Image 1 (cartoon, protein in one colour):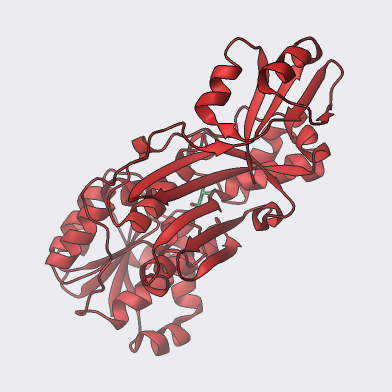
Image 2 (cartoon, helix red, strand yellow):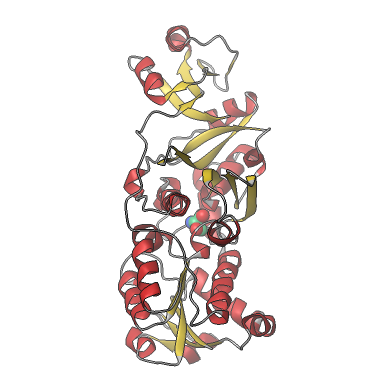
Length: 399
Ligand code: HSE
């Protein structure tokens, strides 16, 4: 089975390495040897053996009938969208880690693959090496998925862990995440929550079987989280985690991405560094927790390699992923009920406590400031109560 890899960056070179490193077991599991016939990249890599199979022109690959499977690990919408459509239209299966493309056009590409008797697989698009997509589409397919809560961005979890456990400065921790190959090419997508938003859109679409767009998902990143918040959260017995939160009620879907305070009694509290954790609640199976490395060259490449083997094994017998292009019905935003963490200056504290009805104890990490937790209330209610207050920081609590 001849394959091609589109993109020789962090993930692409990882796919190349995994296919070479595990060639014997991959051949056994796929039922046939898998050979990398081409790697597509605009750059040259002098001295690297990849040079022997490197091409700069996509048509060489698309016009070669021997190539049956493509690993699209270029990232971004363009030109990946066009290349993927052309490949699928020619009956070539495509396996991808490209969450931006999957979130925006997954339903259409799955449909196109079906029409041309091939597959569009995207295991590596969420949770890096965690087998979450196939679990939702196959193993948990008998369940109605009620809720998905997860840490789905390795870079931000790494940054929050290094700031919280080791007292590192935000930018130093981000640089480490970049050096380890966790961050996106433009790390704004990580720290502003866009990467997690794309993953949330994919998970929500699969849970609903219908399209949830990124625009349907209110998103906050971790850029406003300070060392003071992390220290106050710690005094209150919590850690701050960037969560993707998806809920289904009465055929409606609500989804958001935001930092939350998470307490020790929740499994997600213990998910640190580059690890991701995804807690899925099905109406039959109950809670299922997925845990593993959410970013990095080999974990992500391992997930792509798994898809390649699946596509090779069932070539000509494509699978059926239920994700319609129809829009999912979304719940009204701001109706979610939860507790909130609030940090204010000493001079605002009394007024804030009164407005929010807070009697609970407070924590402080800096002279002149105080932080406390409210009772549970709806987001809209909370926002109206703090409307006239000077709040330094507000973070949702995950109970
Ligand atoms: N930048 C992403 C992350 C890579 O940190 O999770 C994996 O999708």
